[in-house]
Length: 314
Image (cartoon, rainbow, N blue to C red; front, top):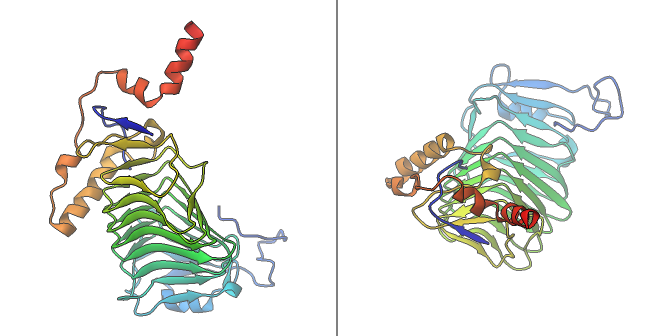
């Protein structure tokens, strides 16, 4: 674990549809369909009709949901995708937006925004599920995975002010979280509990109420985790933390070079501004540049490289 202060701010926070055919079929005797939402069909209608291999292309903002949309195992693999502007899906009050049961490999959500929900997206049972390039705001638990032999992959996602957790996994779920950003979680940024395991890499966990990453019961943060930036809270709770994580003193924002391509200052400031607007708080003192002597920061961030250089010269 390395504690860094006084370093200049440098950064912030396939579709795999299985097929044995060459004709684009899903292999189930069903020719894949692309549903254009909401231009041609509502989200609820498309979800009710969807079959394995189909794509729900959400190209505009659908109407707020009044009930949870449930996707069964026999509807998957299935893809829900938005656009580069990430159309927003509003969860029904006190309910999840989506619930997936035992999704098959290739089931994926990408390029969408979500608001609200007690659990915004819930995945249970077995199977495999991926979430990529999505943004979540509000809600109690924004992604929840619980099942036997369930693999949950989350990448390039932003989680803004969840009431409890940005991501929670339990039971024997395996989590792979890469390049995720959790801002101002009401409890912990990521919770790994039950007998779940989590690999968390290249991620930013900022200003959680308790821990950036927490492990409870038999939950485990795997040894191949690391290169995370955890600041504004106690970094981890009951987890064995990778040595490559960076910790920052409160009031000084510093990010590792590993995450420079992932979240730069221009992306971080709008996230924090959104938190301020929602909470009526001023967090500007925690987003400021620190003075640093050029070259010193690099030596601190990559001590192993400096050590190797000295050994070569010696």
